[in-house]
Amino acid sequence: VNGVSTVTVNCGTYVVAGGTLDIDQNVKVLQSTACTTGVTFILTNSRPGASDYANVSYQGNNSGKLILTAPNSGPYSGLVFFQDREAPNPNVGSNNNTTCGSGAAQNKITGQGQVALNGAIYFPAQVLCFGGGSRTDSANKCTQVIAYNINFTGNAGINSQCAGVGITAISVT
Image 1 (spheres, rainbow, N blue to C red):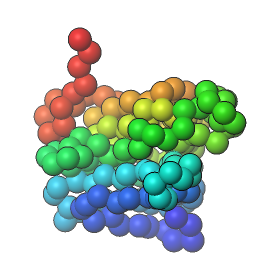
Image 2 (spheres, helix red, strand yellow):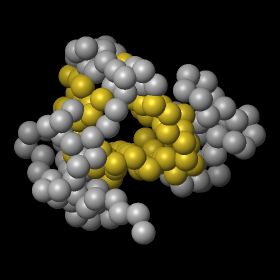
Image 3 (cartoon, rainbow, N blue to C red):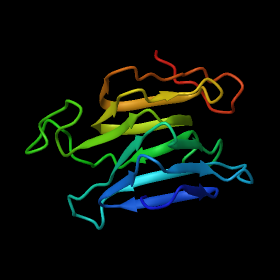
């Protein structure tokens, strides 16, 4: 997403098939205020057998925003970003670097932009780089991260207090 200042996302499930969901530094990605059932982005490959699994790259600056809430019912309940479980593992083949800033199998939320994700970010076989000053804000405090490898750099941080927001907290047993 480049060349526009604001993208308003309606309720629903969006499939990114191959490539990168690339959100440029000045772009605001905002969930529609009329949306009451949530948004999920599914990151997968372009066709069966293809190795071009999609990833996400958000590089917000001070005016950038990424504000989304997951659905609280249905097959993608609680999921804001869901990456295909078959996406390549960073320790296999040419994607063997799990540090932020390098390697092909990475998902990035970086920069200084406002990040307000109510729900889970699910990258079971890939890296999530949460860097720069990217932080989930206190008003949207239920961000859950499930990833093969999570790298926090700079002043990055998340809030994960899900009581009262309609999303089930992750429990470890």
